Image (cartoon, rainbow, N blue to C red):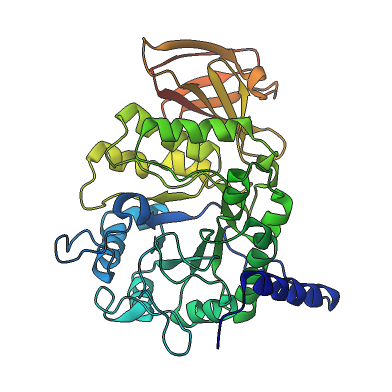
Length: 415
């Protein structure tokens, strides 16, 4: 039988969703997950679509790679810090579905199958994520989920998958308003809680439109809303500026269960200096972003590992209120993340996005950061935990910020 056309498929999804809504059936995502930004490891930035296991057996997309990274999350202390997801990205499957229309993992690179790999990961106390695409193909040219949303949701649940990233290549954005919610519904129906990562808004942004973030947040746990991160300071800086501009006020829909995703942590790859690595970690913490590393965990320098496992950075990122920080001043950038609903504490960053010259000197009082409790705050430097002092709202914080660097502070109201 021929597959339905794209237009026929879209009409079918819309009709089904309309019937569900009229019948009062819950379509929105209900899984109780991502109450704080998810943490873990994902293969894409570091390993891309490397499927040549003959030439690069240690670096190809295979079950061996994911097993090794899972092992290292545990043995190197990442799991104890909260990094729990091991996420498969594109290029994991055969080029064709089987005779029943079911996805099949590449038989040579994943000889035991995804269910076996999920069991391996679960036995380490970790969770397994997987990648698919809403379109007819994945971005790497493998079978997409269009026309197979229900079957794929059921397949992933049967395999024991804990997180699904659904990309948007080879699809029309006009279909996404129905397709991404449909997958949310089918995931609910499986009865297995699977964190849902949507690329939906990113494709809307690419088309020059402003996404409906409230709608997206009702169907997705986390969502990509900008370009893929690359292994460079320019890429990190561009993402920070996009989040600072906050077009469409996407920061306002962030909170427990729903987070904007500026893409992977590349701290430990090739493209960032140490100052730039500190900047990404501080800013991803303040932006309440998922902390999904895409690095070779077999080769991490001690100073980089210390950043990735920094207790203060993780504490800010994992704050239970889930408030996304925002940019409050330029030309040097000042960012503030409230860590309580009544502004009785928060994390802040003085950010120098310049590429050259000398350090930038900053002097700012707490009141201008939105910290107004008259009794004062215990202020510490975020990376080292060094105690700065008990500062009142009119007291100044003085900092020197290197080019492409950050001064990261935390203010606690303990009086």
